[in-house]
Image (cartoon, rainbow, N blue to C red; front, side, top):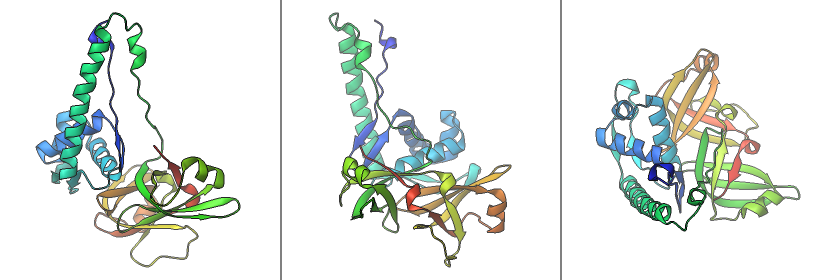
Length: 264
């Protein structure tokens, strides 16, 4: 069996971290090297948006941001790697090198028939645009449902409602780390500091750092603190009526029942 027939895929997991794979590590390295999301995208052959989203996804799943990026549109914007980011890249590359050596050793072993079946990767894939590593800070039980309070960042908390069975299965207790998923289409937006009366339980404040307009919808990205971002997809007409532009303060609103929880 040739080495080319086996590819070992590494996804880093650890305390305060969600799965981070090779593509996103490469994005992190490129942005750090070139100091710009725009330049990193050109070097890697990705779109500006793909790299921007990849960096945000890493930051959202770490206890502290790996890269501090300042949006400057497709023509600019600076970026600086943090100590957390340097440790992440170093740990990933060291583990990847060791895994490669082990893979080759097994493949070269004549007695390891069917070695390709030993290499597999299990990773969570989801259509939810927003995925946050959170800490459970409170669990309130009721006869049917459980209300779970989550710390998303120093500035913001989130509430999820799950069944008692789900709470037991996931082991939800204060201090437990979970991943909270929210589809971008579930997120509503309000502009400014004064909110209308709404039934949505979650009110996440932030600043608009990116707006991308399509023919029908607009994608709005908010900086919600601690290097984390939240994405909402609303109609372009709504984005114009609010209106929402980069730099504006806004609030993301969504129901507790729209938050899905997952654990490692």
